[in-house]
Amino acid sequence: MSTMDFAGKTALVTGGTQGIGFAVAEALLAAGADVVVGGRREPSRLPSARGRTATWGAADIRDPRQAEELVQQAHARHGRLDVLVNNAGGSPDAPAASLSPRFAERVVALNLLAPFYLAQAANTLMQAGDGGSIINIGSVSGSQPQPGTAPYSAAKAGLRVLTNALAMEWAPRVRVNHITTGLVRTEGSAELYGDGAALAAVIPMGRLALPGDVAGAVLFLAGDHASYITGCDLAVHGGGELPSRYLALQGS
Image 1 (cartoon, rainbow, N blue to C red):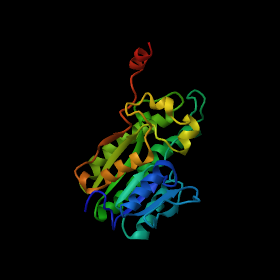
Image 2: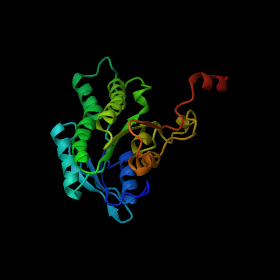
Image 3: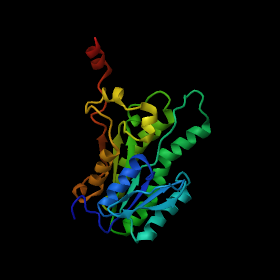
């Protein structure tokens, strides 16, 4: 089986109804996998590719019981689970000095605890089956926090370390890897950044990432060419951001 051939495999993608998750789900479908996408609200459109469409599973993955049920549902539908992509996440900006405890708890639950609940349930099935691959979608905020993102950045930093810990515990049958994403052009980012031209100027690659860029990294890490890769952090951020001192000199 080549890296891009996932025929006979089953993948679960959280947050798979929009943005990065939608592109990941479509890439896995195009590669032959059966795909289940999960989230709290049923979408008007499901990912599809090459005449195949993902199936939907409703769950608030911040709830450990619902997270486990979503994993069990994906396994029951297709008789196996080979790939889990922990993509769901995010947070609105909020000043650290005044945000509520409930806000902080919900942000950490979505971005750190939910991936753990899902990974724990998936590992149980994968260890008993043919093994598998778990991929956590992280953010540069985990190492380069911005104002207004304290709980989110802390949770994303934790997700990266959690990946390393699980990779050590669950090898060799289950591989656990992490993707650090930078700015990605999605429906949500367009509302915040417009066409992204100003931001693209500080990215070495000269543009924001596309959801498909992240999807390609997922296919690699989930496939057989990455069979000896676990505990890695794959940066998909276009080279990061040019240093402020460099930009200041360029403008002088």
